[in-house]
Length: 145
Image (cartoon, rainbow, N blue to C red; front, top):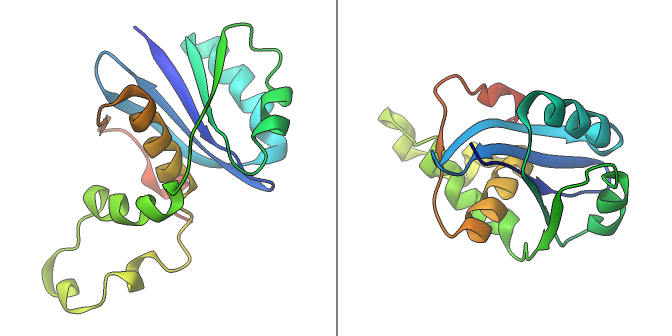
């Protein structure tokens, strides 16, 4: 299995996605405090044997990359332009509007949503040039606060 981590870096919080490339599935999607990221990735790598990390080239990518210097496999910095904007559209692919909610403007549903995990997913999909689906046991409550 070929597992990847994708990170949408931020000064205070980061979106992180763990995916298996051969299955095209996401197994974890979280938003994590930037200070806790390195320890989380270190523990995740012990459990999952990560092959590669992809980091968006935005806000604090250089600092995040330095925090992950313990990771001896490949770390790639990848273009993340417009991922937050695109995450708004992808949000509705992942969480479609149903029922009478169609009468309410779509923007109402994403106000105050952290889209960092979805942005990390978009970075991953752009890098791999493919769309990923979600494992059935993924807990979206951890990344839609």
